[in-house]
Figure 1 (cartoon, rainbow over the protein chains, first blue to last red):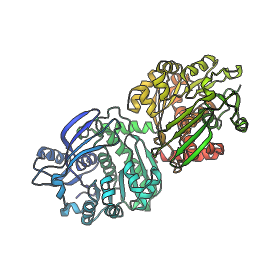
Figure 2: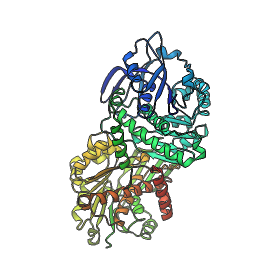
Figure 3: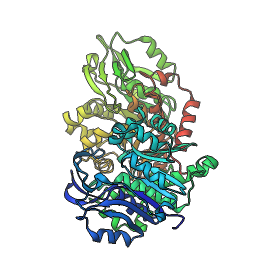
Figure 4: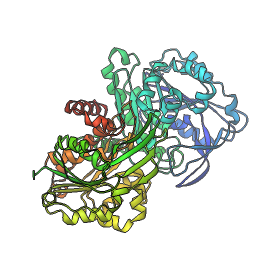
Length: 313
Length: 313
């Protein structure tokens, strides 16, 4: 297994989504998909999840064709996880209309020996008990990150705290950070969450960008102000994918957070900017259509444009 | 009159405000106050407005003691403008509970010859007909800026458009920019408003910072993430005060927007950052209490901190 590989455990799903820009039925989605497609622009990825017999084989083949290993994707008897959601004019918050867990209900990730040795690990927004099960199997982590959501923050707070105590980085939405921390202030929320375990906290603020707290500093990253916002679904997961992809490509080790906080800060700021750029592409179309035909030159150009927009010169 | 002086026309008022941090009754407020106190950190200011006989003389004396000329503040028979408002947990939007215009109802600004010659002009959020009356009296403007609000955008759209066609810079809230432009996207909104007249558009986004559109670029300024948010009232006016104060201190001329767009962009980006820093102090206490004891070193330190938070290094 390559030293820069990333393992992610998350969902592969069908999404039915309505936004002010339109409506789609049963398109491909899920945190595991968004994360790994985004991360694969930077580093090799292995995705662990479960799909039903109705999941398109050619999508798994397409993932394989892009350095995304799918040997950890189990095909189970039954139907694939299906999320139905909508967004009103305020595109920053999704409303869940229905969730059919289907085969995801009995998801219990068992990692192969090859997967256990992967150094970069991202636990997408799944049951914190499962997140811990995965961590128990990981043997030589260099960096472990996770996400979570309202459902687990209120439903399994004790288990979520146990997960947080074991991760280096939490990437979470603004509203969820407020719920988790009890603070309605981004700086105080990040500081409170840092006390729960992760040395590094990223708070995603949708079209307003993202904030980063490390042991040595606070960084405010803008979002790229794309004029074509079609569907925000997957923005957060693809953001995290680019963050982890960048950190894996750079060989960032979690020990740096304390042994060389300045270098850690430098890497994390760039990672967050890469995340911001990636997310801005994700929202430009339904599903991960825009990410599937993204060129390196698109990333480079947009990151340069974003850097010009945040510069004083 | 000094070449760097600023004239502002706006309200001097009493505010009664409830926020999650507390409640105050009939404290000093009004756009003319917030703007001029903020701007006076950078340049001499003359404020034009009207107050009732109940307005404290010692506050006018205090303004005078800080290079803020009050000869344009008329004391009329009756009571001072009184705004009653509240903020819920989402501190970005005020709810107006009552507005007693009082003496402000018949406000009709007549400028003295000395005021007509002032080069930097800021028309606070007042009736666009009055804004045009002021502009008719201005003789040698170097830079004219204004603000507006929902009430005028929906109530006097034609008159507001006439004002906009005559100003160089509009500084406006995000929600109002969307209402004015018909776009629910910050970049598209700014571009649409630019077509209405002002070469430069600043969209204020509360705790999310501010965006700037000039003829040559787009800038995303963060807000300073202060942990002590007590009352957002006046944040936008003090933001505009620092912007205009900085531009006046630098001698910025509106012709630069087209004759030297790079230099204009450079000045405007710094002005917006100064505005962001000033607003972050305003919200730390009720009324303009925090601004009244602000030191230059406070501004310098916080701006340096904010610049570290937006730097990739």
